[in-house]
Image (tube, rainbow, N blue to C red; front, side, top):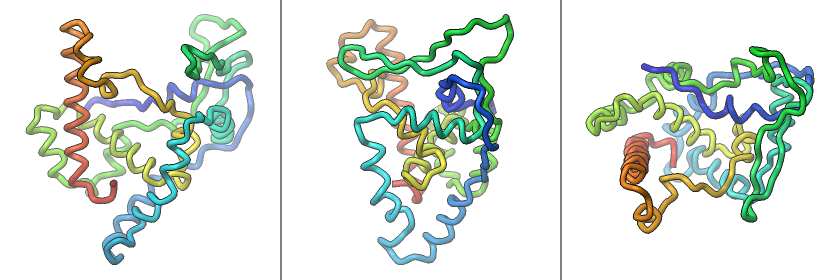
Length: 226
């Protein structure tokens, strides 16, 4: 399988000092295995998933992007950046937008950002983390639809869904709370938007929507994510 890297590595490129911090303490998702155990022994309607859902969504659906909190969290996890490398805020058409800016030059090939390897979500690591806990039906469905090549991305999709389910209990909560709340991507377009696109671009957008639908369908066999 191809190695797929999460946008987390890109999103972390946001900081403006050479701050020294403690190393990121990453566990291989003990909560995931705990959920498997506790859910099987709980009565209907009392699973840990339901309890997490009751508090997870309101804060993550807040319109405000908690970008500076995300930046602080990244520093605390061991991310280091060279002087002059930071996040800049802009307003575009009345919408909040963030971009990466550097006010200092650097030699060719020099590094501006250092991210602990343990922070990076990769499909190879997640495949090991979820080994034995994902219903084979999910993979079978993706293969049947011709999406075998997307299974590495499905691991990332599943991981993000599980972390989102935990809300503030997730170690990645500060990152997720910094996400934009509005998207202008294919999966967010309605039929009218799609009808305005050139033929080739419309085809690509429809393929993206079909891939998302396939991921959602595969997720139905995974009872620990709502």
